[in-house]
Image (cartoon, rainbow, N blue to C red; front, side):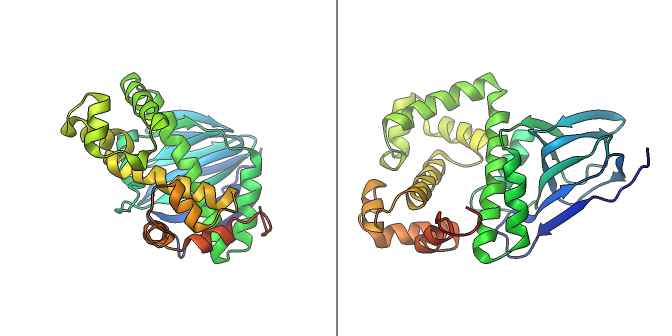
Length: 277
């Protein structure tokens, strides 16, 4: 078998991406693919969408199959080989502070070690991202980031579920949020319902979610707004009422500060009538 370090296809976007993303890519390799030892100055997150790849680190080899994601901390020397070839959705995560604490969460959950986790992203995710990268408009960049973030968040949940203590806290926390909308809970409310002190709750929340409990609830609120914008034709006033804002103006300020674009722009970009949806 002829060995090669040249992929069959590679495409990426790297400009105008929100922190902590510095690159999002798709790649397909041929059979006999080998990329000798190398390292990166950023976290490397690769979701395998087809085939399999063997990752060699310090003499230890790990096979990563389709449906799994491997996470490499910055400056980790590694070698990649694939007998039959593979395809991937990849992302480079810079060690920088971001409003959503994605890098901090990644670093915490992996304990700065090489990690492999299972996700549930279909092959369609690869083709979708490839189409978005081929037509890198602002809206398609937003879609590409959403797809990459989904893989990252799925990885976070998988890693948390490995620790029974994490799983128990997450279960109690999510049960509480299923009974009361997160935007109706103050820090004291959460402490009272969970039976823990402020310090204990904040410490556990930062360890598991990469941020404080109040911030985590704000993220859930933001996610709910995104869902309503994408899946309903409710007015901003109606969405504001459903998510605990006194008016659409306050919702817009909250959303724009977190997303970097307005609710209206997000709704247009995710409309089922636009390309690639």
